[in-house]
Image (cartoon, rainbow, N blue to C red; front, side, top):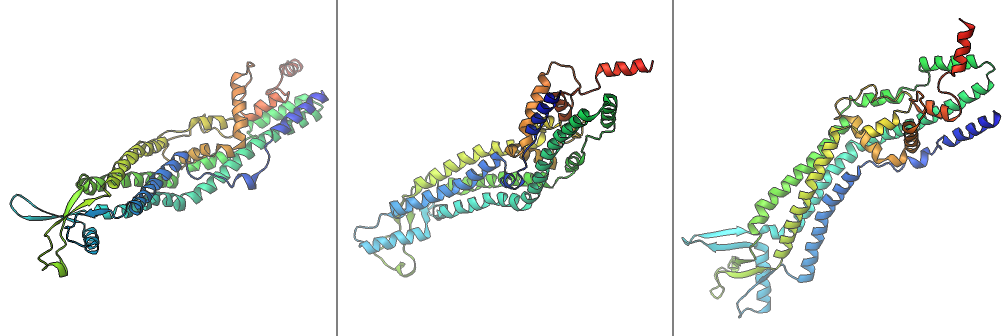
Length: 392
């Protein structure tokens, strides 16, 4: 009997979780994996295109090439290129002879519009980091710590029960006290459950998360409007007519009225426009999927932690509308599952509990570890029969 108790003590000691508060809680992920992917693509992609635009300008020379008259010197031709790029206005006459001008400024503003797009896409990230991340971090630190502590308390409780059972001279007294403790719910530590229940009535985190994703959708719609209104108008125009007879040159008779120029940077504009539409169109369903995750509970995570005493949010049907802070916290608990050391232990116990062939009333980790330690989860039948025989 002593050897069996020693083996049970070793088994329970191995089941205790190590205390690694300082090191393990520094690597909390305060962004979901999908949110991080969206951030890198939405912010990094326009910066990549901006570098492409600047690289093309430095490698290929001037973004336009004007066909100056043959009698122009090299300095005069360079002046025409510079003047036409500065104005970047297309001059044309319609069928009635009326003069019209069309600005081609999207070519000149392309790198800066990409920079503005990257800054705009980073604003929702800043909103989350400063408005929600500090509160979320404190919530996760407390919940992860309490979940692991609750598991350890359950194991220590079984250790204590094993010692009391070994020292008890009268088994009837031990089982009577144990049944009384179960009836009075001494094994339960409801602080964490009540804290999570309070988070169901809080909506600050979920409001910030919804605002973050809504801003991403809003800025994506703004991209479509910008590309459709400004880039589409100059998307196929490779050549334009430039007027240099302005200022001091307006009275020069040898200067032609219009000079034809060719946009060598048109291919860059086309690549930027098409790739931006493609990438941000692919991001839209990802953002929408992120929002739909708030409409359902992660019941698998909750069902595993139902084995902890006083953690029965599911069995008591305490879960209501999922759009609240508790659901956001559960999503981040799932993202930080590596920080939850108790999760792997409880997952194994849940599998063993579901596959056990013995018909025992196993509800919590205390019941299961009691059984593994060699104790019956309820009063043995032979002791119950003895009591009935002594009190007919």
